[in-house]
Length: 114
Length: 116
Image 1 (cartoon, rainbow over the protein chains, first blue to last red):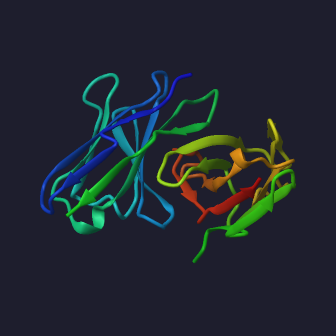
Image 2 (image 1 turned 90 degrees about the vertical axis):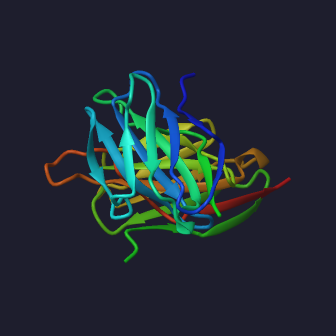
């Protein structure tokens, strides 16, 4: 069964460093997403990406964040200068339309900023 | 303000018992998603409801969306320890152009414990 994959599963970085989180969405999906979940809190939407551009982003997704689909399979989230408050679980998700609006999530990358 | 509220926040049941988790939206929904999450892990897709009055089932789990598309319930029949986890509802609302890009807003989750 097709699934969304994410690497790495856990990333530890120092404050101020750049990190890139990687995702491989399900192959025939057209919409891609990043969400995050701070420990003990709700899952929060960060950004949606369709047709090689950002379709929607949240207030959290400021200039420190960027997304890219560098090739036909990968979808990346870059945080330019990490802060302590960026520590969270980051989930990638993907969806296909128009036959189905089902949105599937990856296993997540736990980012720890020290 | 809470846009999506789940109840109860936690639930402890004995194996074999039925249970219901509710999800209420302050706004009309374009779609309502149910996911299950194990602590520290990813979200597993359960069901998605889009039409008012719609009901879907998968194994022993049934989800319904009310006619007004503002409230959904998730019902588990004859619960098993494997059903334990955190159940999340996610709301998809139409954007300004009348379509959805799939941005989901989540409730706070319901923690389900099933005692054998």
